[in-house]
Image (cartoon, rainbow, N blue to C red; front, side, top):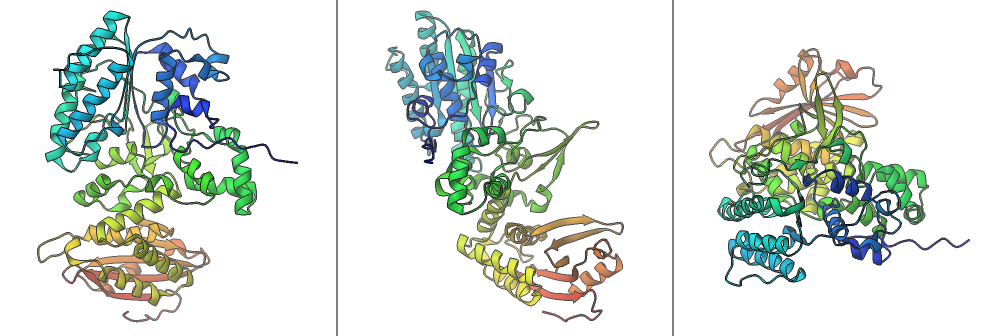
Length: 538
């Protein structure tokens, strides 16, 4: 029997009208839309990039423009009492405005406002050249001609994020945005509905400080699934594509579902336990029928890597980190906090939540984000190309899985020796910091997909690293500018191996030394626990 034709995958389709009219798959979110327009007025939603925010904004625009025919068969038509009032809409998408310089940004910003004026048949004095003054005139004219106005702003923080570590460009752009949101507050009496999306919450933009009644729904339990795909939505709307892709991969459907869950599921932004799939990754996976890091590769998080490097954060501290709340306050542009930014940008997500006392455990959402994040960190911190990084990771993976400690250490030596001198932090004679080497070492292991634990607590102390494979447990103690014999003595003295004695695996003890002056891996000592005889220095 012939399979029914598959509906089109909406890869990159952000206009609700195009998606409906051109037979693309649409995951119905209109129940959320109805609830927001019926019960409130001013909203802010933070979600990672390419997670469906722009399509949601476009859906609001079509709704307020009265395009009811587009919504046939959707929840808001079939199951609600929505009256379909129409309003003039001002829609601004900062993701498509050039922000390479202050001048280019002002030109693009003004053009976006002029486009809204043209679409609403409003003539604005051509001598008005500031975005904030143009906005005031546009809103006042629209309100006086008809009724209140709908304002939709997508990716409000994109100009800031684009230059977050470049204050000479960022700060003038920030002034323009601050003046604009101050003007927006001034005409709020003419606004029927305001919806603003972004990735992060920055203070001093007059957005959060000015709009006291702006409701932040980013971590609201009731809107947890307003964008992204739940597993139920995935299996309902993409069932045909799942079957089609499983056939191409020559795998059972159940196996493909498990793999897709491990790769692309796992996002959670509130107390709501429902986890979400990344829409862009899911759509691109079905198109290519291949597992890869589609979302991560679609936009290099340069600003995040620079903050990591600047803050000298040990990467192991960012995995399974516990915080008291996820409703992070808006924070100062000049003092970016890494954990809130990683949560809001989607590199960390809620893995567990408990009450009394309330606390959230944050970690990487899935395989895609975790492996790509570590790989990109290595590329940024070392200047090495992606192919080289991948080669080192695979070499380490295969060596440890085979118990080949000589190859493992040899690969590490080549890796650290290949990092250009000028790339490494530390311009004085002391060389790079301890956390630099520890983070790189951890990233190599974790990015290779190894089962790694850092700072493992025992009743005697903390093990620097443990790595488990099918047949081996590696207990690794790292030292800086010291003797590797001291590292091995510490493992024995504190009996770090005891929790693993019943694992049924060969236990391998390693003492590794990083020489900060030579900027290289120093002496290393490896010993099989069962042998009782050290294998010697490598």
